[in-house]
Length: 583
Image (cartoon, rainbow, N blue to C red; front, side):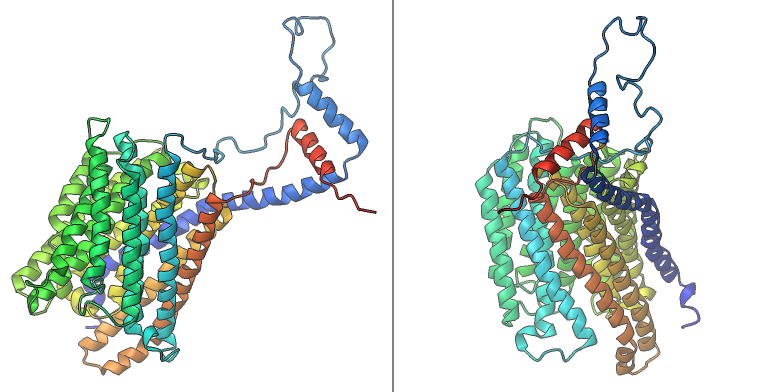
């Protein structure tokens, strides 16, 4: 079996898919190298400039004053036709042979606040994003501690901090706290923008914010206290708590529907299709998952597969794709490549994704025909994934050069690549042979992070870095955004690759009937790499939180004077701020 594993198509496809993000990451690194070098050079130049103006002599000041006067000179109509000898006293040809920047590379322009967003709506959006970041930090701190427990399982002996309680705290907090808050907050921007009207009711938005926060807070406390829903993964919150979350979503859904109903445009843009459908689906998913009377025996397993996969595909993925159809064209300043491909992806995802939940239970006791339908539908997901990926990448056509100077587009590109590789890897994982190897191993954990982190989280970061500067007029430091991007990406690769490799070996050991404890010992170094990668991801979240703070509270940017007038003004300001000792 070990000798023939690489002959299996599922394994071969998986190897190709997991290498794609690495190659794209290397490409982005090469493209961004010039920008990093340029930034460091500018900082060094600023230091040299400050030293220069401090030691500027009176003669040099006079030169700059003459140049400033010359450059502000307006040529009379008859000046060039007179009899005066040619000279450069007026500064007309000053620096004619000097180029400050490579003119073929566009310099990054600062955003200005968008006047069509009311301050009240902007505050609501920022509250949603702010709370989402809080839950991201809290939830991934719990996840970081869980990763450490794999390396040091005796780190504590407190019931509230046991793995069985903290694991659902982590998953539910990043699901219903981080990702859901960010998506709903961003939707409050997109829905009225593409409808060309104001939001229907701001108070409803705040009610939704309060209810969703209450659900995550109460759910976290109940899980740590040992009060949970029993079985299903990602539905550990008890039903009264999840009902609060559902009511919050219903209120925002009503708000969005009323806004779309009052739209000033004839067409309903595809973003609104995705967003509103996702909010309708999540309510249906929660109702189906929490009503008990059809969940006896194997029915509970089938419902669990439905709930778990629809939560990811028809809530998180569906809504983020809707946001992508708005924010990517906005960031590139060009229309989406094909509206028809967007509609094709929309309907085929609804058709196939709603049928694939049972592919988590291949070789189980559920009906064989149901397992087969799930596998066929998983293969059918190739259609919406390829349509969506092609649509997004083709939208980049003619704008790839923007990657050199943009701090947001790398997040877009990597999330799109992960959308393709992560989704296709999910299709391959549904094959019977690969399922036989990987099911019940940490490969599933790696796959969930490829999707919820590589796709959803990277998309949300891209959208937030796009939106917040547009509504505040303040940008984050490019260097710290780069740190955030690379730490998150490299950490994710360490995390997922180590678990995929180790889990494949573990599955083969089980198929060879090796003792279970041997597979546990074998996983030790892979769990260490999981902890290392997870730590990098966790640190990147604090960098992201710092960047968000800088976008809403930020000092003036570093400015290097270049013209004589700017240099003289800098000298005057420096002179006015010199320290004068007291007697």
